[in-house]
Length: 215
Image (cartoon, rainbow, N blue to C red; front, top):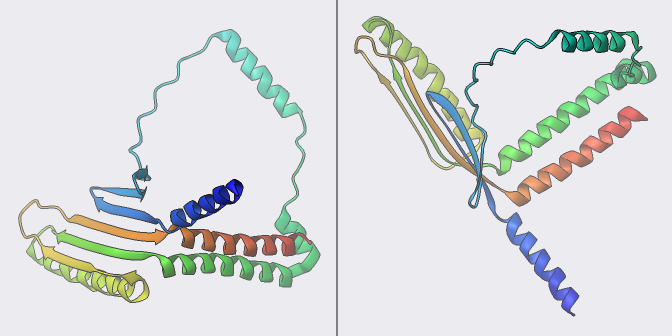
């Protein structure tokens, strides 16, 4: 009886965890920031600035000789050529098999993306652009070009994805020496159970595609 209670409590805990939301918080202002959050756990995926590489110190003559000898020994050893799976598939099944495999891979990638964006909910999408050109005429023409791209793009995102709320604000900045500023933010969520289902479906299709390529 005690074992049954423990198993049921573990299953209940896993069920509650699967109902939790994975939060995606992304933004751009001078630099890109991407944060994935589950409850109080955070994963920062923002690209970091590259640090300048430190100059390597010159080693002693003996160490340099040893490294040269190792490199020469490695060159002398013949390396075994690995078989290319795509080449073997081409030899076995020809063009038709290769095309069929390519279709399966594209269907797999498309299914994963379709399943993700079907379940992914964008609760808030804000786009703010302050456009500035070299002079007034350049600013006006550039503002028109930006509006012609951004407004239809956001409209397509709103119509094709699950967007609850969005705002787009594009302004002209006629001040001398001003620079174009871009401020974007996105907040979206997807349940963990949906991630599990998408991953399992993709894994099953990937195994099927691999077996077809292999045999």
